[in-house]
Image (cartoon, rainbow, N blue to C red):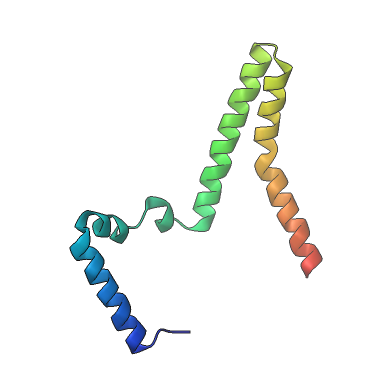
Length: 96
């Protein structure tokens, strides 16, 4: 549902008032963040790779230090995304 002309004018007035009151803040809000410009698939891939690298690093550190809690933490962090994807797929299958 689109905005009415009156609502659009009100939003423009608010935007102008904000720009006059705090130009630095208005400029900051007008620039899109890098993660908002990326598609969801790219963000998912970045999150997946980051999680795997962190998990495998913890896992290797745990094995090197002979620390079972650190090894378990590394295994858990590495498994977060596959478990999340599996649960999401199972929920979607049950909904349809």
